[in-house]
Length: 137
Ligand code: NI
Image (tube, rainbow, N blue to C red; front, side, top):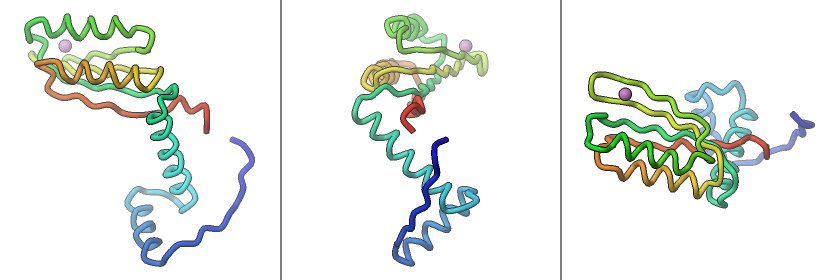
C-alpha cells in the first residue's frame, strides 16, 4: 500500500445519514474504508467499460444430460483457453452441474465467452462476476 493521504469530504446531512446506515448494514468499521471500496468499485466498472485487462468469474448451472450441451460448453472454453485460467466443476446432484470459470483477459473477450455460455439451450443459470487484476489500485 502506498502513502495514505487524509482529505475532508463535505456532503448533505441527509446523504450522510443514508451513507452511515449503509456502512452499518455492510459491516464497515469506518467511513474511510467504505469510501475506498466504493471508489475502487467505480474504477473496476470503468476497467470493464474501457475494455481493459480484467479478471472475473463466470458461473453456470446446467443439466449435463442435455444433448450435446456438455460438448458445446467444452468447445467454447477450449476456443478461449488463453483467457480461461481455471474451471471448477461441481456435480450438485444426479442431473445438475455447477461450473465456476475463472477468467483473466480483455473485458470484451470475457463478455463474449459469458454471452456464448449464457445463450446455450439447457444452461439454467449464468452470471458474470466482474473483478479486477488489482494492478491499478
Ligand atoms: Ni457434473
